[in-house]
Length: 68
Figure (cartoon, rainbow, N blue to C red):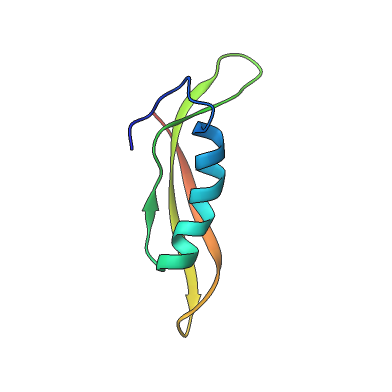
C-alpha cells in the first residue's frame, strides 16, 4: 500500500489494520507511514506491532511508534 496523505481512508485503514492484522495472522506488522497530529507540526510515523500469544491464543498487541 502506498501512503497517500490526502486519502480519506488513511486514518481509518491504520486504525483497523494495526490491531486486526496481527490478531488474525499472529504475525508481526510494520504499518505504512501515517501522519500523527501534534500541537505544533504533524509528525510522519510508522508503527511496529507484535501480537502477544499464549499457547497459540491471541491476547493482544504491543508495539513501538517510530518517527520517520
